[in-house]
Structures are given as structure tokens and as C-alpha cells.
Amino acid sequence: MKSEISPEPIQGNLGGTDPGPRNIELDRQNPDILTPPSTDHGTLPNLKFSFGMAHNRLQGAGWARQVTIRELPAATTSLPTLPVTPVTRIVTTIPATSFF
Image (cartoon, rainbow, N blue to C red):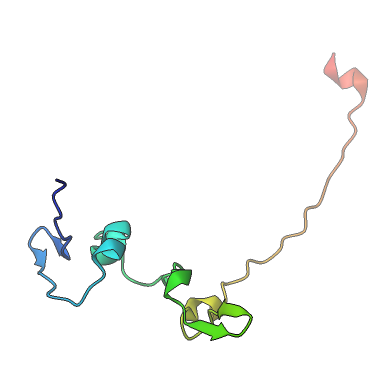
């Protein structure tokens, strides 16, 4: 039988136990979200979203899931655009006699 140890948001002397409710399987799959590294300052949005967690709309012909900015607000985040620097090509000709 496999040991079922629940991951906890504890790192060294920091953090503590989480009584829940929690999705233990998601915690196991995303350890850096549950217990982020010390270099993580939380400035980047979480770009991971489980499509299976989206609302499921049942209709006569089947079903449909839709993910909107309500579920994934980072989808509207604009990344800074980098300036485009034109590349200039400079070609010079050197007389063959200067190599000898």
C-alpha cells in the first residue's frame, strides 16, 4: 500500500498546516504553488488552469466548457512590448592589396 502523505505549505521554519478544504492531488501536481521557492515574490500571475475545473454547460446536443477572464484573469494581462531595433548592415570593401 502506498503512503498517502498530504503535502503541507511548510518550508523550513516558515508556513504551517492547512486544514482545508483542499484538493490534495492538485497540491501534489503543483508543489511550487503550494510551497513557493524563496525567490518567488508572487509577481507573475498563475498561467495554469485546469480545463476540467471550468463550468460545464449541458445542452441537448452535448456539453460545452468555457474559460473566460473570470477563471483565468492572466489571459488579459499585456506583456511589455520590447522596442524593435532596426538592423543596419554596413558593408565595407577592403582592397585585396591590403592583405599582403
